[in-house]
Each structure stands twice: as structure tokens, then as C-alpha cells.
Image (cartoon, rainbow, N blue to C red):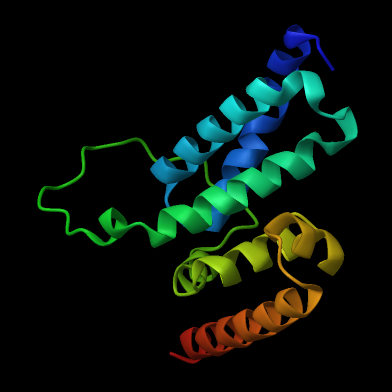
Length: 160
């Protein structure tokens, strides 16, 4: 796939969806945009070697790893001492509710990645395991624990 012009078409068509996936992985729109930019850069560098059928899988793998790595960085836990600048509200996706996003924020980065890849990107257990480079058993256990946590948080929130 050596045609660099086709990269522009793919980036233009898929970047908005990748941005939503990235947001669900990290919970921060600014970081999601950064993750998508790094993903696009890595895609561009390897464009001539990529199989057209595997572009989305490659992008999901890169985004999941970047989101997990970003959550591990100590500067993510740094205290913000100034108010963030006034920004326009990002496009709200109708199927995303504030309650579910808030509940996702309580999960660890790997559990969040498993849920997003499994249920938002609709990957199988095997594909999710391959993307995250973990065993299928790990995907199943992380998924079960994360779903149990979400159920608890969402039922507590509904009864309040």
C-alpha cells in the first residue's frame, strides 16, 4: 500500500471514529486527540507495509497501548494549579452517557481498554487479546471484573 494519497483519505475518514475510541480508552479529549495524532504518525511511517484490511486493527492496537502508557506516566497524576482555558464543548456522541463515561473513568487503563475494544469496537476475545498482547483468559477476567464494577457503579447511581 505504497500510495501516500490513500493515507490522506483513510485518515480523513477514520480519524473521527478513532478519536471517539481513544476518548473511551483514556477519558480525556485532549489526550485522545494526541493519541490519534501519534497513531496517524505511526500509520504514515508504516503505510507502505500495511495490509489495507489490517489498518483499523493496527490503529486500535496503537491507541490502546498509548492510552495504557499514558495512564502509567507520573505527570498524569500531577495537580493542575490553574484553571483550564475555555474550550468549546466537543461533539457529544448520543450513545455515550455521562454516567457510563464517569463509571469508565473509575476503571484501570487495562480494564478500560478491554471494555472499549470488546464492546465499543466489537472485537472478539481473541482479537482483543491479540491487540493488547495478553492471553484470552486475561481479557475474559479483566472484562468480567470491569463489567461487575460498572454494574455496581451504575446501579448505585440509578438508585441515588
